[in-house]
Length: 85
Image (cartoon, rainbow, N blue to C red):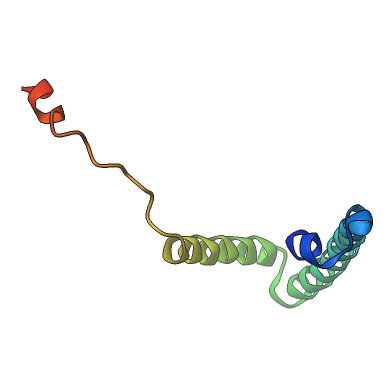
């Protein structure tokens, strides 16, 4: 969305383009999520949204754990061991 527009849109139209993408994106996401959750509630009961949200959170946690690189930890100075003795 916004990062693509940063390169694709002319400078004078970037803020308008970002507003349009955000409005359409959030609007469509709201409509789709309400429709999907309504279907899930009808077919699986009122606890379905909670199960879907929990499953989505677990999936996202696994993806973040797998996709992100380990944090950078600088090496300790060689004199650090002598301070604790």
